[in-house]
Image (cartoon, rainbow, N blue to C red):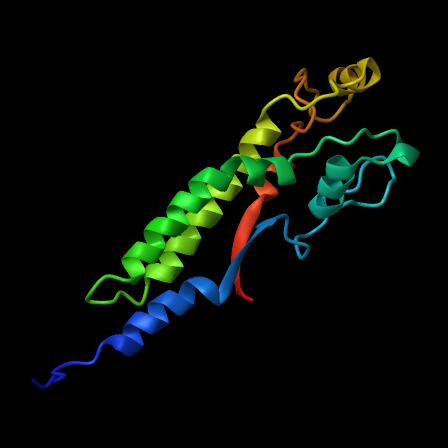
Length: 167
């Protein structure tokens, strides 16, 4: 008995599978975003710096740690695993779909991004200090009464994004 190959789609199959393993999804705040507007004669600060200071805290600036990035990604891990599993199954299907890796990784990125944004929107301990709440209410530009620690203007939350890059 002999085997006759009429159409070899193995290279496409291998390409779809390798697409899932040759790339990585990075979630966070891009460092190449423009700085915010300077306030009260202070130099402008960027969202990545604000994110870092809030994630890890800054005792020198009296900023307590309010982790949001790592917990947000960790919260999404079960859904991410399910999405990757489904993508791997689709990568093994015939006829092979060369775009399955891109769609799968985009879905993973959106899951992680939305999970991190949800953590920011939630109340992360410790609560805001009374002085911070007072300053929010009495400032001349855009006074605010919100009590959610990492949400003032919403710029930090909107700056959370993802990218897909080669490993």
